[in-house]
Each structure stands twice: as structure tokens, then as C-alpha cells.
Image (cartoon, rainbow, N blue to C red; front, side, top):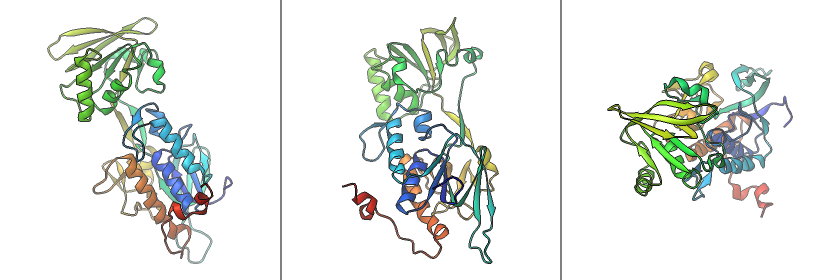
Length: 344
């Protein structure tokens, strides 16, 4: 598809849900345009935790986030979707086609760099606009990128370093375990005495702490960070005022993220609990506009990657009456498609 052509489906978001949706659209022989504000596809998988292992992706005992993102892109790219990266979708406008009795409007997805016509739109924007949570310690700012980090892009960067990880959720505890074979020393600090992570991971943390491989400090909070040209030590304090000084080359703040819908909040969509409300066909209150993945909400919603895959398949199926009016909706099975039979 050439730039400026009317796409059958424009997907806003190139995260895991968006990429699999693009693959599903290809199976229905729909032309696809993908728009994403990030410089590379993969969404949270590549932006937040590329080297973190994912254990609940179907078909993989474990796989790194960046490898899963790469596989999803390769899968979608079999159908050569038009990819528009580093572009932020600002609004979705509508114009009626020049026919006496139009069935539905034509959409224009307006970005900070252009406007793209489309028969339908599928929003797969993940968390929306997000930023990491920090702590109130005033000195934190001057050490950002010089010892204080919010995510791990390259695991080898931490090789042989003394690492302090702050947090009590899955991300914090998962990275404690992931860095055991890389960091010289690891301290885990959490302000509560109970972790909010998978029981099996908590058990692994406890076992490794018992062997002296991890130092666990609960309930403790960061009181101060110190160093000259870079981070050198972290001072933590418990609820009784007891202080502990930790030698630290790296302070990882894994306290989660705050998110908001950004421009999406002004697109005339029904918002439910900070997410886009959809029906069983993944359609929003704006006919012809669909949503999939973490950004959606409906009764019984499970926020899992595999849920986003299923939603993508359903959303694409729901676009058929818009992109090919009058066609009977038939599900596309990969085993019966010519493109895949040629790969045998």
C-alpha cells in the first residue's frame, strides 16, 4: 500500500496486540497501516523491559520481551503493512464518502506529521501515554542516567555492579532473579513487609536470600542517594528510624507507571475506568472504530498479552462489513491460506 492510499484498517499502536492484529488483518487480505509514536515496533515489550523473560506467551516456555516483539513483527510483516513510526495520533476525523447513501464514514487519522485515510480504525495503544513512578527523594534527579534507572534495556550493563532494586511487585522481583547471574551484589528494598508478586517468585527470592545471594530489606524506604560524578551509595530507613547504608552503582526504581489516555481522551469514545469501553466485537461507541489490548475495558476483561491477541482477531473480523460491505464474514484459518501453504 502506498502512502496516502485509503487503508482498509489503520492500527494505532505497534505493541504486541497491534502487531498480532496486523497479522490477522493480513489473513483477511485487508490493507493495513500501523501508526506508533515509538521509534521501533514492540510497545512496552521493547520500550520498558526488552530483556525481561516472559513465561506466559503461548508456545514458549520462556522468551525475552524483545524476541517476542521481533517474532510478532516478523509474523505481521509477512503481509507488508505500511509502518508509520515516531508519529503520534492526535485525532480521528470523519468524512462521508461521495455517494448518495453512504454506509459509513471514511476516517482520517491525523498525526503530528500527516493525515491518513482509512475505512476502519483499531486502537491498540496499550497503556496510552505512560511515565515511571519515582520517589520523593530530592537528589534523585541529578543521578538519572548516572546510576538511577527506571527500566533495563541491556542486561549486560549491570554486569559486576552493586544493584539496589526498589519495589515489591512482579517487575522488581523478576529483575532480582534475572540479574542474579549478572550483578555482583543485589539488594531488594520494599516499603511494605508483603510483596505483590507471583508466589513462586517470592519463594525464589526467599530461598536465595537464605543462601546470602540477595539482601532483602522490608519494610524500608529510600532516604537518600549520594555520590560525586555518579551514584555511590543509597541510604534506606525502616519505620522505626533505623538507617542502613548500601553500596550501590545502580539504583533501579521499579515502582510501576502512571498512565493516561493522552489525545485519545478527546476522541469522543466512551471511557470506563480509564480505558476504552468496547462491545463483544471490540467496537467502541464510534461505529467503525475498534480497540484491543490493555487500553480496552469490558466485563470480565483479563489484562494479558494473549487476551490482546484474541481481541485483535475479533476486531479484524468485525471490520469486514465496513471494508467489504455485503461480503459474508468467514473466519480465516492459516492452514487454508495460500501464502502459508507455499512456506511448507
